[in-house]
Figure 1 (spheres, helix red, strand yellow):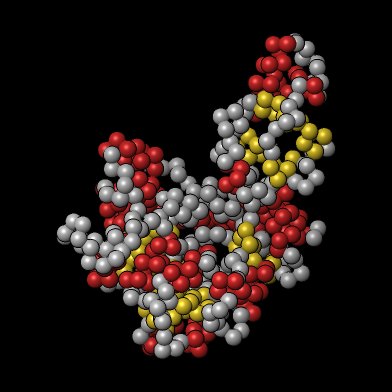
Figure 2 (cartoon, rainbow, N blue to C red):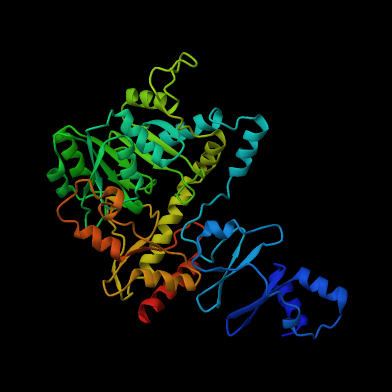
Length: 466
């Protein structure tokens, strides 16, 4: 093609750049700056673009981690081509979007920036300020006025909850075998031992019928994780906890907005923890929350969070504590997120409904998220199980080539080196099957129906041509 053709493309896309390809293979790129420099030396619009294009440019494989791509953007690099193994151009990263369709990204389209500016104007940028109090209060109101303590992240929320309940050396906490490693790590950092329990084949959450066999005189708590937004079978677990005098800890990091029989997750146990990491349903960048049923526990937790300092005597420390506080700027983002909480959760559920409908007759899918009349599934991450015949990693790689970022389900905790020494259920076949066959599909609230159509179309093509 000619320089004139390149000018036309750049004018049409408005991005100041175009890519030169032959049969999809990336040969070079041309920016409006390249063309300006060319016109200073020549004025031939019919010159072949191959004589003008830049062949020394930044590019990445399409499977490159988003964080690595983001670190490569500079003032003069606003778009980065993403290629496959054959150097075919399959996607284009920009400073606002590293892949065509990311697995999860936050929606920060409300008052987030306004409230952050307010923090900067008033100099209330650390852990003191009106937004911290407001965020805690509004979050509590969403959860039947449970006692809230905002914290630095979801892992510190778990650690604080265990320390508040005096769980430590010699104690055991029953943890589901499929969950993010922070659950096991928090128990270990509290100097207790995690005991890994098999998960339910349908909910992928902790299996109630397996819990009692793991209870010993050392057991102090059961940790329930509402995985991917699916509510665990909470009623029988509550009965078991009550029968044996155990604390019930709800990890709701992935399930804010999920509801069981009219009540939000986080109000069924003695303590609940939440995460506001960048990929969660609502986000403060980093951040978390602990909710307690008992106000005395909440008061103790707040002291532990604030260095163990006496709340009435400045710089007098009654116990050794931690610095797990949330900043006012993070809380400001949280307040803005809560203003749109209902619409965000509704959009997540709509995305789930779109997937359900489009995948209704898709051969190769073993299981989709289960639905129940008693449960409102907030769909943090729409996750499916493939039939055994498919290699999920190969499917994930093929979808990457189409500009679609997907993710595998967590590995079973009992199989990883740091956790092999801890006790677990005798039969963990459900954990293995779900981990081996599960993939999560993009679930960001900014996705539109046409995006879901494209994702499902590509998934069906990959499965059909496997």
